[in-house]
Length: 124
Image 1 (cartoon, one colour):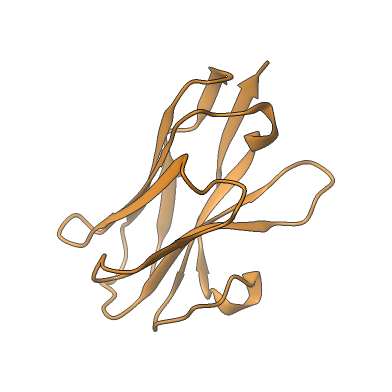
Image 2: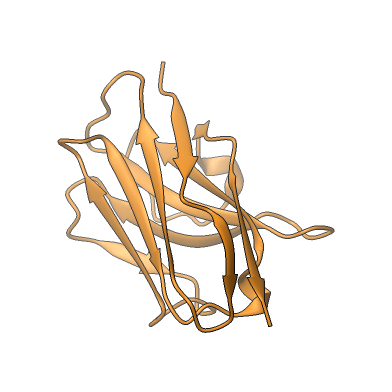
């Protein structure tokens, strides 16, 4: 079974940075797609970024493009999200997710495995 555990969230001032990590403590995946989603109170879970397992293809939501960077380290079975120039509207519970195959989808339903989330709060 795949077990995803996020870490690295916290409270930061606007303009600051955070680095989220998502470790897979379960079985190893290959040819998979990893993604970050986020959910703010009262809002639907939304796509943030995704990356193919090889690391040579990544995609971002328009709202974070140029500020966030997704990366994957398969040797460590860990996914990262470097978040710079944070804004109050980036505040949310951030989830990592995995699809055991390649997918270009940004839909929540397309991702089979999920972590429990890590809270990011950006103060103004």
